[in-house]
Amino acid sequence: MILLRRQPFSRPRFPRVLKEAFSRVAQSLVLIGALGLSIVPMQAQEQLGPYMYPPLGKLPFIQGQVEQAKEGKVTFTVNEVYCGPRSLAGLPFYARYAKKESTIADDTSLQGPLHKGELVVGCIKKADDGKWYLYDLSGYHDYHYYSGSQLETPAVIAQIAAIKSTCHLEGTHLRAILARYARSPIELVSTWALGALGAMAEADCRASVSHLDTVIGGDPSRVSDDIEYFSHLWGEKRLTPHERMIVDRSLSALRGTKWSKANQRVRRFEHLCKSLSRNKDFWYVQERVDQGGFSDEGRSRLSKLLVLNEKLSPSARADALKIYAASQKTPVQKRSATAFLLKILEKEPSLIVHRAGCMALVRDLQLDRLDLKKLRAIEGSRMEDAAVRHWINQGRKRMSSGGEK
Image 1: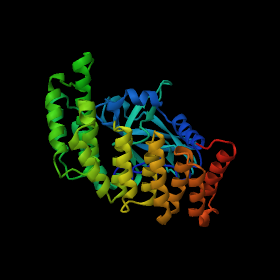
Image 2 (image 1 turned 90 degrees about the vertical axis):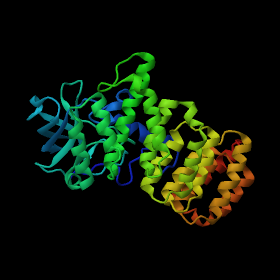
Image 3 (image 1 turned 180 degrees about the horizontal axis):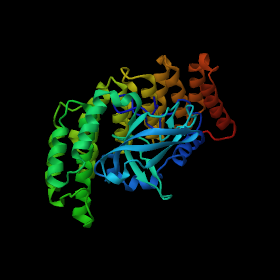
Image 4 (image 1 turned 180 degrees about the vertical axis):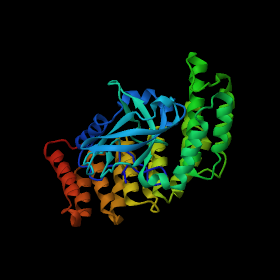
């Protein structure tokens, strides 16, 4: 079986989540390593948004099989072309390959062992060297390739069938079919369709101002209809958290600051942050809280609700804690946040949350000498842990060097 990063129906891989976060420098090195190993540079990814929702990107959508797997690269052959030039059948394409799990957070590499004849379904893209490569967007997106036993999963089978059925459609007909799929009870299908509709709407919105081309026969005159469509969806209670975050992303693109400050948006996010109970939902909501255009005050309030939500796992709450600490900008805010986190840590049983709390208090909130003393007392029984000890020692070094605020 080809092992890939987790699919949307399990916990999605979110590049910011690092189990052992000892310093900002260490995190940066991991991120740089991941980006450097990507098949498609990040700049290209940002410019090719529709590619995350086939068939909008017009990349060939194919089924291939493994021909050879060597350390560093795996070679495939195109078995069947679902969408694209039929002349691609029988041609080779490639992907990065690691026989063992990489210690670097590289979301674009396939991991082995791989065997000749194993199948993969996804998009391929022609690189500057003239060769075709299995295409993937690292990070937090709603579609990428599937392989191995994933291809036997009913949800994946349904999504692949939906993509194949829309490959040759454009314009109004494509929108109508996507809108039908957006109401699918299979979340992997509905989220892909909602994302594709959103990408079309965003392209039409940009085209209405800049007169640039739209994706797949778009229609800039439909922008007001798109806003009404997504606004209506936002009010529906049936949406899963993942579906709702895709709708939010589209409304943010279509309405800008009018949406980012809308009361109905803020109220819904507050409810979600209090009620989430599944990690697979948390990662989608957390991404929007962190990058969805909220003010620092809004990010602080929402991430605090996530930290307090004990239905979530320790790793989820720890990640929310990092966002909360980074949202505090003024001295008054930092003092208040320091008091809150110290109170949380007094009764917190999870070592994962303690590690994140120590890092946030020392690195982001720059607690004073008295609060450092409180933190040391709270963490006394955990000083054997390398991460806890590291951050408390960092705080002591800052005090001794005269860096106390």
